[in-house]
Length: 299
Image (cartoon, rainbow, N blue to C red; front, side, top):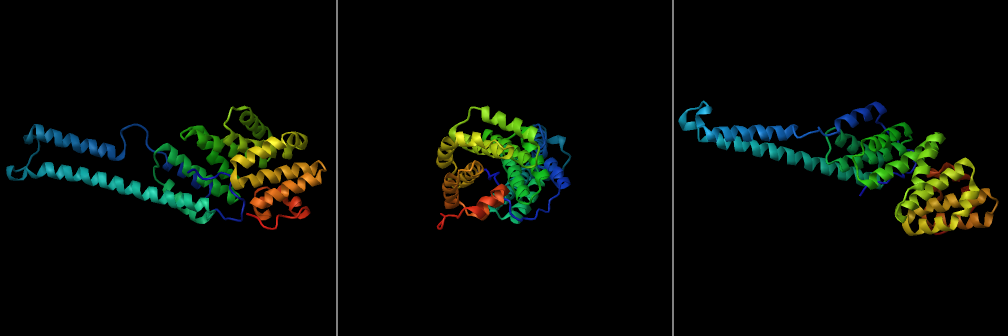
């Protein structure tokens, strides 16, 4: 399961620098082509074994010791395989811990395990992409947008992940650019996403991003026109994250002076997420948290 790129904006401290990330991007990329690492070692050992079996005289050894050579070569091949399997198990366990830490927003633990995992080649490509997205979530939580943007851009440039991972990276990067004031680039990305033919489950996330763009640019009238459809999409496909969408709709109605509707959407939002979580993710919601009462018993 890919980690969410909608990281909450807590006060997490990120120790990894942009220079560190550049090194991780290089180190984590597996060597291209078939001639790499243990593959070369196994091929060399198998060629040695084949040559010896074809002509035992090729290997200078006393006759009484020649019977040991095939067993020695086979033992070396087994050792190479065991070392590779052990390395893969360690990597898998480290990534499992990292993804779990990111899921529960234990950012320091997630960062530590991700940095260790990405310090060595990570394969297959989809697993490496998942790790990069997880590290980007840590960077967003640690208020390091330049690191998060670099990671999202790398995922999109290399296009080595699954389609859902690439879509998540596009949405996250567009959101980040919008929040950082890079309006032209953000609007272009969001327009492309909005025009794409997407299943409803993905359309819900894009609609939330378009809604954020409308609020950022002061186009709240468009947000009101699409509110019923968006509410239905958020409810069906976003789970508790629908609270973010409801809160943004509340902001749109509040700006239009329609306080009754804004209050209803804010109530729905705070039934799913506490006000502190909403304002941590979207700072522009802070006035609503002061103006409207939250649900008394959030889920």
